[in-house]
Length: 323
Image (cartoon, rainbow, N blue to C red; front, side):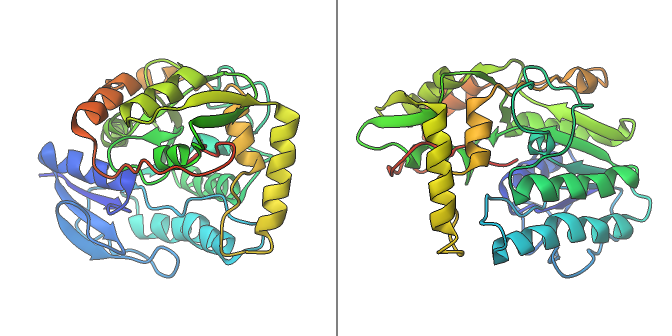
């Protein structure tokens, strides 16, 4: 029986990877601060120590610090300790074992020109600490011979970031988004989990992972809102106004460094510009995406998927969650 160590197995992506691995007959080690949904718990604080990977045949590294923190904040320092220093400790502890390292499409350079992104798209110019630290962490993993997966905007059952943040931005039946609708890639967590478990045998390098086709941004958001029983109209905030609002929100957040800004330049960039991932490199290895947003919406609408809040809050949406 193959033994798979899944770091961050108590988190959103890691828990799905661990549960899928166990369902397929693997022995699972859930490596992290808290136990995962299956298997044996191996305690690990990624910000402080090296993990014990004894007995593992494969390591899937999902542990990460996520968010959009204020520059110079303690949260930003924690992000570097986990995403960069934690990676260095993990790769050393792996000691030659195959590693699948879950990165993010946030490593790609921001701005226009992302209508079809292949893995050779520039990795630079990041707008927040998450993009910078994921890029630095994956560089260490790539240098050590890992397979690096780059999903975008992972969603699914138990998602604590993307959909809850989106729903929380509905105000009085209106959800404001920056600029007109654009095509965007999204990644169902089931598609990511499949890739994580297939990728151990792939040649080392980076691979984009996303749903079968890109989505129209506004229609995708309407689909999610309907699935959660939220009646709201999607409105468009002119891009200059959205950028000005992001600047103001980030300036205000510097006065409260323990909170994240309500809107950031990173969020505006992720929502206002087309970001479509070319997944042909992963497909060439035999992987294909089997889930799409409609599957999630149907399951949520009929069964009210656990872990999803339907809160209402203010302002333009900052739903560009990680990875």
